[in-house]
Image 1: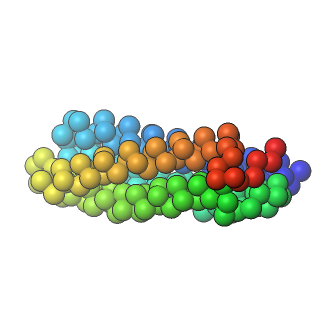
Image 2: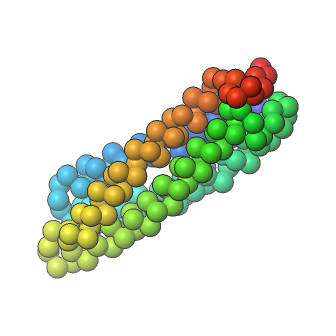
Length: 162
């Protein structure tokens, strides 16, 4: 029963990371395309809240549940596909943490522009481009982690327990 609960939480955490990442990117892109500072500010406000509630929770749950599952299955944590997953997880974090700051800053810039009836300023557009670019390696790394969890490939002579 406990194993099933841990596995469930791990799968839900992976789903949340993938789903919120895709959803946030979609809604930010759609808002950005309008050029409407008020809509961008509103969307970015919701995106920041979603990142804090959903993504941050999953970021904490994933390594805890993953380590418990690896230990239960007898996988060495720093070897093979699990080690590759952990490295990719650090890559995701290296891109995600600045993105959270960027979203907050873009929200504030759009809010200030909307308050005076102006379009988002150049600083917003620069942050947007960097934010958008950071999404590709982070999202690709999340997909790779999920693939590693499912496929459990024998990397570097690692263990392949089933």
